[in-house]
Each structure stands twice: as C-alpha cells, then as structure tokens.
Amino acid sequence: MHVTAARFVKSATRPAHYPAADFPEIAFAGRSNVGKSSLLNVLLQRRNLVRTSSTPGRTQLINFFILNEALSLVDLPGYGFAKVPLAVKNQWGPMVQTYLQSRPTLAALVLLFDIRREPRPDDLQLLDWLEQYQVPTIAVITKADKVGRSQWIARRKAIAEAAGLPVDAFTLFSAQTRQGCDELWERMQVALEQ
Ligand code: GTP
Ligand code: MG
Image (cartoon, rainbow, N blue to C red; front, side):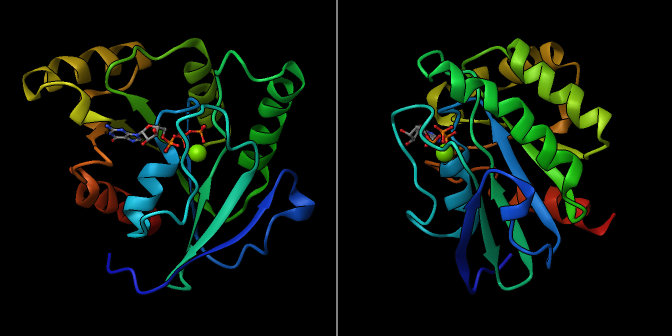
C-alpha cells in the first residue's frame, strides 16, 4: 500500500463519539505494551503519528486514523496491564465489546502477540469475542527482532497452539526492522475484499 496521506481523526470511548463510518475499517488490539501503536506507525509510514510509549497502558481511548481518504485504522486500548486502576480495567471489556458489535464497517481485527510471551487468558477472551461477533481476525507476532531468527518457528508454534489458531494464521512482524509489513498489508487487503 502506498500511503499518500495519513491523519488522526479522533479519540472516542463510546459509539456516540465515533467518527462517521465512511470507510472500511481495520482495528488493532493486544496487551498493553505489545506494540500496537508502533505497528500502526509502520503501516502508516509515519514516525510518530500514533503515540507510542514505554509506559504500558497509556492508550485508554479508541483512536481513529484515516489512510489515503479510503481506509480507517483503529488503535484499541491495550489490556492486561496490572498497574492500571481497577476502574479503567473494568471499562475496557464493555468498551471493546461495544466497539466490536456496533461498527458496521469493521472488516477485520489485527491481534498482536509478543514473540517472547505466551497468550494469556485476556487474549483468549478477546479471541472468543471475535468469534462471537464474527470479526475476521488477523494474528500478528510482533517484536520478532527481540529473539534470534532460530527461535521464530518454535515461538510461532507455541503461541499458535496456546491461542488455538493455525500456525500459518500468524504474520511475524517487527516495528524495528519492518519485517512482515508487506505480508500484513496483503492479509489486510484480503480481509477488505471479503
Ligand atoms: P499501549 O498503547 O500501552 O497498549 O501499548 P502499545 O501496544 O501501543 O505499544 P507501543 O507501540 O507503545 O510499544 C511499547 C514499547 O515497545 C515501546 O517502547 C516500543 O518502542 C516497543 N516496541 C514496539 N514494537 C516493537 C518491535 O517490533 N521491536 C522492538 N524491539 N520494540 C518494539
Ligand atoms: Mg498504544
């Protein structure tokens, strides 16, 4: 995808505040600090359009971006960070479930896993919702640069098994080396054409 224009539209927590559903949409989700915002910056070919942070749990809002006035990309708040206040934690589930159910233009959700970590119960919970609400899922294993190349296959197998998904459903990605960017675009394109 050749990115000619990328812009932030708005942040929202509930449907009344979502921007108009004018374009097909792809959302990005995963644990706090997994690298969602960094991956979005790579896809958008912008160094810092999407705010990244070394402090997990920074993004507590649903952030909407528009690419080439043709495609909407959504950065969902991360989950699973222990130090987030309980009130914030309790908002996450309803906020994300409502989004998944109420966005007619949602074509797919890209779910990120950290190559160094096993999927946790909250990852599996999200996978259940995606199945329940029939949202096509694109699985990504990110931070591939954090482990040696020789471990990629084994890590992908372990994560796929724990997530209950086929190994070839996963794209290996790194925001640092940009590995996997083209493959991810191809998978997104396929989802948009369904
Ligand atoms: P929240 O918004 O808090 O949920 O986090 P996030 O999932 O958006 O993560 P973010 O993109 O902010 O990245 C978190 C940290 O991981 C930052 O310090 C990034 O620089 C780092 N990071 C993200 N992706 C990669 C990657 O592919 N490789 C490496 N080495 N670091 C990465
Ligand atoms: Mg973020």
